[in-house]
Amino acid sequence: MAFTANLSLLVAAFLAAVAPVLSSPTVNEVDNRISVRSTADLGLPDPQPGKINCGIYNTADRPNAIQINFDLAENVNTCTTPPKTCRRHACWNTSGVFICNDSDLNVTLECGTVARFAGIIIDDCCRGKGAGLSGQVFSDQGWNAVVSYANCNHDRDADRPGMGPADNPWGPNGSCW
Ligand SMILES: *[C@@H]1O[C@H](CO)[C@@H](O)[C@H](O)[C@H]1NC(C)=O
Ligand SMILES: *[C@@H]1O[C@H](CO)[C@@H](O)[C@H](O)[C@H]1NC(C)=O
Ligand SMILES: CC(=O)N[C@H]1CO[C@H](CO)[C@@H](O)[C@@H]1O
Image (cartoon, rainbow, N blue to C red; front, top):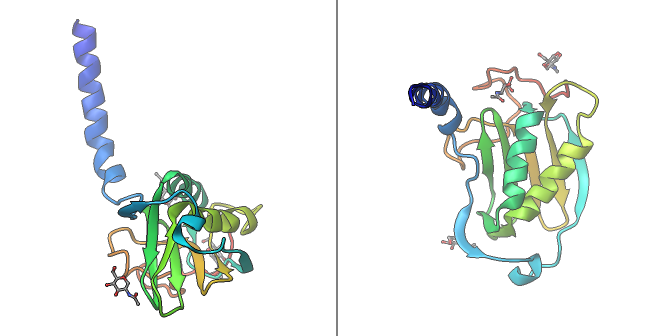
């Protein structure tokens, strides 16, 4: 009994120490609206990846990026990006997944499609280096996906995958490392 009580105290102390760090930023920032099974349900052809640019942004942390992208892939909701904006759809610690939308329309994708494109960056960019990862992959539908440094405390529409040193404690970068 005494042992059990001490154990729960230990667990409570552990959670108190760790929870504020781990739970403050949100992992997935999706629109909890309609749930779709495939892009066909949205009336869109399946988007195809095109040109990819690696190491051009402030870097995300590769293990963190893999984790948030896994969670995004599991999400059955849609991820909408308004016209002429970049919107962050997943964020944790110092890593984010964005969709940048060049078109005059809202881009509504399955969150799994966002994760599929971010996964191309994770798979193809900055391999064989350290934890620093960033990249951008264009679709054939007027938007591109970005994995880069992110500040989860910023509003999801105010946080841009910028290339400058401002607000980035991990270095301006623009390279794989
Ligand atoms: C948070 O990100 C930093 C910088 O990318 C990294 O060094 C650190 O390991 C990350 N923290 C966790 C808990 O993953
Ligand atoms: C984009 O979606 C928002 C929110 O649903 C809506 O208010 C806006 O009119 C839409 N814009 C376009 C160009 O469809
Ligand atoms: C271009 C550039 O500044 N690259 C740097 C990114 O950060 C890593 C780690 O601090 C450096 O090793 C690179 O030189």
